Structures are given as C-alpha cells and as structure tokens.
Length: 310
Image 1 (cartoon, one colour):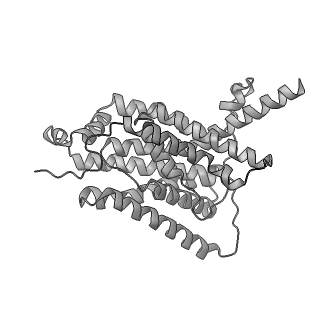
Image 2 (image 1 turned 45 degrees about the vertical axis):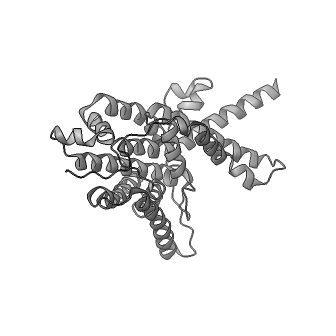
C-alpha cells in the first residue's frame, strides 16, 4: 500500500510539473501560430523569448512588482518583433536569416547587459507564488494537477481557447489565415496585408515575451545566460507538429513539459546515466517527432514569402 501511494504521488507530481513547465512553451507557441498564420516565419522566437526573460527579470528586480515584470517582458518581446517586422515585412528581407540574427543578438545583448549591471552579484527576486483555486485545488489528484499553479500557468491555458476563438471565429483571424495563404486576395478585398502581418508578428512577440516572463520570474526567480535553453526552437517544432492549432499545440507543449520534468526527476534519483544524456531527452523526442511527421505537413502557402503589391 505504501509503495502504491509513493508511486501515485510521484506520477501526480511529475504531471503537475509537466503542466507548469509547459506554460512558457504554450505562450511562445501560440504566439508563433499568429505570426505563421499571417505568413511570417519567426525563426527568432528563441531570441524573442530570451529578451522577454531578461526584460521581465529587470522589470521585476527594479520595481519589485510582478505585474511590471510581466508587462516589461511583453513590451520587450514586441519591440524585438517590431524590428523583425520592419526588416522582413516592410523591407522584404529573408525571414530565416533575419530570425537567426535576432537569436544571436538576443544572446549577446542579454548576457552583456546582465553581467555589466550585476557583475559578480547574484540578484534575487521573489517569483509568483502558487495560487490554489478554492475548492477545486482540494479535489483528489485533479486538484494538484490543474488547480494549484501560479497565475501565469492558468493564463497560459486560458489563452488556448481564446486564441482558437480569435483565429477561427473572428474577422481578424480570417484575415490572418488569408494573409498566410493568399495575400493577394486579402489585398484585393481592401485589407492591408502588411498591417495584418504586423499584427500577427506583434502578437507573437507579446506572447513570446510573456512566455519568457513565465520562465524567469514565474518559475526560476532568476536570469542566467541563455536561460531559455532552446525552448524557442522547441516551440517552433511544436507549432509545426500541432498544425497551427492552439489545442494541439498546447497538448504538444504538455508532452514536452512532462518529458522535461521526467529527466529532472531522474537526475535527482541518481540513475547511473550521465545527467547530460538525461537533459537531452525532451529535445531528442522533439527531433524524433519532427522526423516522423514533418513530411505530412502542409505549410501555409505564403509562409516566409514577402508580399508586395504588383
């Protein structure tokens, strides 16, 4: 009986951690859906998230307010995607090359400014505390899995149906999808294609920055060099595997979160496996999934292609 209870507790804790770890990925991946639906491939999603982690940490450290930190993360993500939008949407530059430059810039900028400001000091902040929902959090198993998280985790999962509603049930969503499939038709109908693409990319920046905030001040209480550790690239893969559907993307994010939580627990249990090998488990799963399913994907027809009125 004791063994059964221990095993049950382990699995509940694992799944709860997976849901918590999935939150930053959901923010970033749902944001990327808006950009790609509009025809913009934001390869710089990793850098956008990293700027969000940095801006959120700085905002919370100097203000002492979690709200200000989250707002700073959103603004940071939007600023970097606004620059990307000018280069790729207005000037028609190659979106992949521009995204790679954004990633390189973000790593250098955040590391340089953080080390210059704090040098050998290790700054401390208090992240968002869990907010168990009354009554719901007291439910057996389900309460701990879904209703004992921070407000940012709840917000990530609330975002999923809202994003689905916006994409599939609103005029803006129709314009976004059309701009990524047949932008000339959107232009013919009198809608500014470039403006629609800017909206999609800025939404991507806002949510990716929010994902960065959920990571630095929502979970880890700190900022370190390259804190995102490839999560932006994982979010890109999740968007493809989820076929640009918010619900499928959220499910993929939870799977990755559970795999990440599993490798962390295996390290704690001191398995006779190098921790470096355990750490790559989630990334290996993502690569394997991409290799298996990428051939079946049908990308938005105008994805990655600059648009100019003839």
